[in-house]
Image (cartoon, rainbow, N blue to C red; front, side):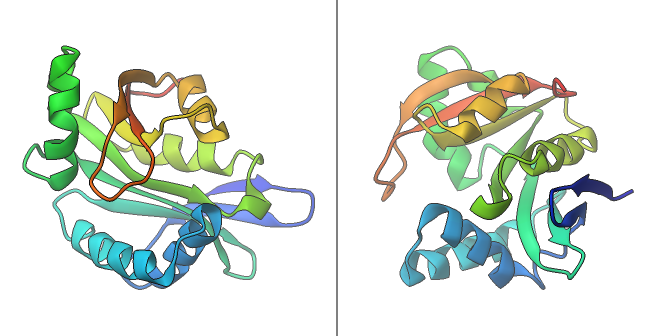
Length: 185
């Protein structure tokens, strides 16, 4: 069932997203929020299109009444053989948290257009997608600094499992965070 978030000027509906069909719109939201280059978008496009073929992968979108995509989230059951897991595993193991890679739902991407942030859209996206997860917990990574995104994750019950995680080609370190499901409201 779609959720509606009413903002000052526009109603936004949260519901299933055909990420394959709307990948370019989703990446435009991410690019605007993160300031990505055309090259970075092209690389991420291939990654997203591969991810959505994985077993259990699903996506939700936040759309305006006119159909404009202003936010999205996608994730999947974690698999230790996936690239992300192989990068974060040594950091988690060093802190005694590598078991979080098992039986977890990973939030792969969550982005809301800056003009629609601070309206509860990101919170609704992440809680809705994790509410449908069969796994007992959720993990994600976020750039490792005090940001509104990390504040949101902490408010939902995510704790830092590892900090200063370095991904190849990422200019900034990340934090890996985990939370039991269901998320705090």
